[in-house]
Image 1 (tube, rainbow, N blue to C red):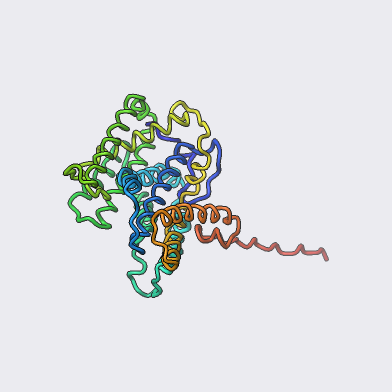
Image 2: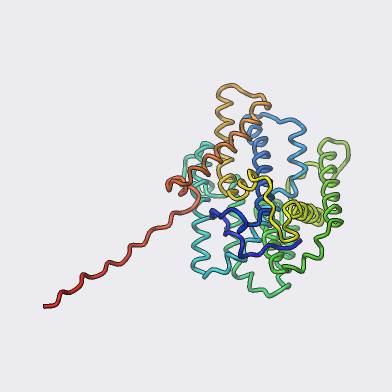
Length: 359
């Protein structure tokens, strides 16, 4: 696959321009991945907070995309790293404080209060033990990226390789996941470095092979979950390093398919599914807003005695999207925008001394 020009990409967390200045294929993939995250939590949250189990079909969809959902989001974030690194170090780190650390702290408070935690002095309160682990991981990757980016040329391929290998012996948990998904983040940056050298692999045949491998693997996961086979992938919801080539194939196939859909592989930029591009452009807002919204909806339905998954699932899914769309519209107001980006403090312009009148 051909990597996009880093100059055409916005920094993570910022509100980006629309149109030809953006890579539409990236917005489409990011938007689709965000929808899958919202769907996952629309089933998980009613189960965690109300014991409401969703149907098999929805669970199968979640299982099918489990290997690719977050991996794609991290890889696309890594593609944006090159443009961020072009800024002076002070500007680079301050932008990450504004667009990652600040919303992490704000939404940690919002999320925990929604879930009923009120003791801000408890260190456990600030640990990314909920959906904000994605933002936390991104902040860590961006913090070490300027140092790792000094590795020249294709030697940079060692970075994702070492991170993936390091995740293998570690016990399942935050540290193992940090290494595993870090491999995808820095693999995205590697794709930008390789540039046009990847274009020779962007063929229709390879695309279909990758998609077939990913589809077969997804079917294998579902069969294992349903007990039709003794699949080692039964209950797959995390990384397995031995399955990494299959995950990479699924990601590559998806990227190549969407790039063909938008004409990006030929240097064009066809406008497809603008509503999905909108979600992709505002992915940070949709990601931050959806989880506490779904917790609130679930608790409200529980208080009303509603335990039917045919009600809770669409309520959590479409309700979260509606609130996220509303939040995007309300960002025109500073008080709402401050929930997602630390406001810039206006500098006072120096006052000029009054002219001296001649005696």
